[in-house]
Amino acid sequence: MEKRNVKICWLDPEKNKDLLLPVYQTELAAGMDVRAAVEGPYLLESGAVHLFPTGFAVAISPGYELQVRPRSGLAVKHGVTVINSPGTIDADYRGEVKVALINLGKMPFLVNRGDRIAQLVLAPVVQAQLELVTKLDETSRGRGGFGHTGL
Image (cartoon, rainbow, N blue to C red; front, side):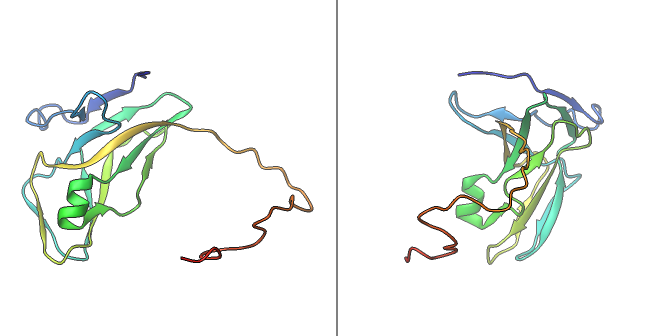
């Protein structure tokens, strides 16, 4: 499996010495679990959205992004997911990585310091070069939109 370096630093090393850096939980995992750097317990009410700190920043090589994705267990068991999934950390961003969670479940969800709240996936990026044309090529689908093929 190909590996790429991603530089990472704690924004306040003394304050975050109790936290772990993002880590792959298994040998072939695509995503690294990322932990909440909340000061104390935070109750995410049903229907609420909150931006959770991680305490670190990254430097990603040009041509890549870090995608912030939900953890499947939180989504399935509690209805807690990343609201802008996948979130994107661009190669030129140097601020704190944060995770926007929404609680779609019926019960409040407690997030404690150090809880695994999302996963980060390094992915290649290809930028589009737009070409203005007067007409697009025809396809068999044409302008068929949402649900045009039935259930």
